[in-house]
Image (cartoon, rainbow, N blue to C red; front, side):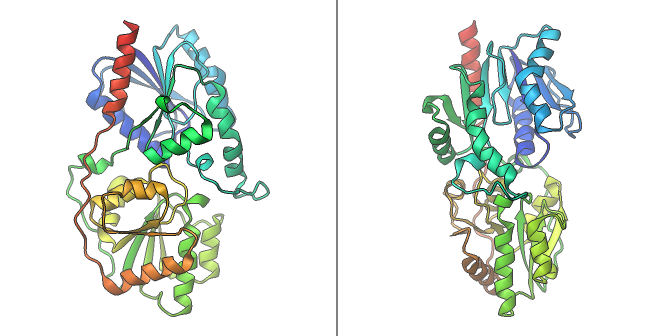
Length: 371
């Protein structure tokens, strides 16, 4: 079969992890089909080794350009190049306007799935307000009876079905795996100052990642003189004055407590995860939360939001504390507990998991149906 993969909106964060994971699974499992994979032309993705996998670069930057591509330009490109795909896989939440082929959509947009009142009058929240309002329309815009969806967790599947009124038979769950599954390098430890207790929060600075609760927790500890030897490493964040929680750090004079690492490569992130005393994960919207899995695979103490996604990811892990994501006092309390106790690593969570086979089973069934 000829399969089109649409990933033209992916540039960073969880979407990029999904794309990299998909490419790895494709090289590992695919032997029968030909793939054309459409990517942004500025995305730094290495050429795959698959003989039947071709990367096609497209100049798409804005949301308008993305919509035009999904609505019209991809279909036009296929017509001009006389290509008739048997299947389209979208790795970016939405269907393509191409009714002639089956479609599989990988859904990983958490914003519409959780109840949260975004403020349309706030410049920091208007984008999320739009996503929350528009996604129910956009998800169904090019939907037909041949469309299947993928979610990453059972609890997300449940939320997805309720939010978009999709038949449960049309949704399959494929848990992502960490690169640690296939990580052949020896994990190094970062040399961190032993005079401090070190935490890490690996997350991009979206509002729903809830960095602000860590600032509030440290402010509480500063007021009772318990913050001096605490360092929170922020992987994925720049010290940027345009970010609300960064301004709050400066305002509260907590600059010494937060260390900004900016974007970090996987090796560097795993090095930091393996070196700190505990992992913090206060995000209140997720479709998975991969750092939770990686932290558990390293046997690390994890303090995270008490929300269904985290409960499911860490269901079999016992070195975790679940906290209300809005309760700054409780976050402060648990940070101090780590500061005072120096928890040692516990038994790591067994990582090995390759659920991408489910996708290739579906593709195989579609292939047999077409024969």
